[in-house]
Length: 183
Image (cartoon, rainbow, N blue to C red; front, top):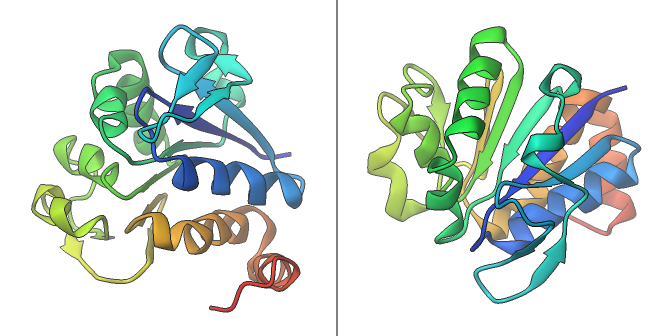
């Protein structure tokens, strides 16, 4: 069974983070909400507190198939400032495991050199930070083991792309239909 961890830092964008959790859990993908703050309650950029499943220190990354980085400010900066998480992002990419980022968070991947020669997208204000990427305006890009997306309005497309990786395109289309989402 696949396991996805969505990482939360103070100031995350709640729609980008929680849409992934919701839709993946609907199709039976084990999805864990993980705090990088040392506290199980993490507050979003719009002051919405959410209780996490685990702390970063609790995660056995050998059992994780994908790291998801939601955007939001200052959440993106707070994720990028978490050295332990960034070491795992680098290790995942090197090992061919999936890393997904939405909104401002793909800038983290750009800063780390992960997007070199890949198609990628992000929130328009951060496109210059996608170092080495072929920047697109698509709602989602899947480039090998890296998935990027543009922002809150693309959160369902982003989540469905993740579903398609683990459950196939048909499952993603069935889920879209179940939640009354038109592409």
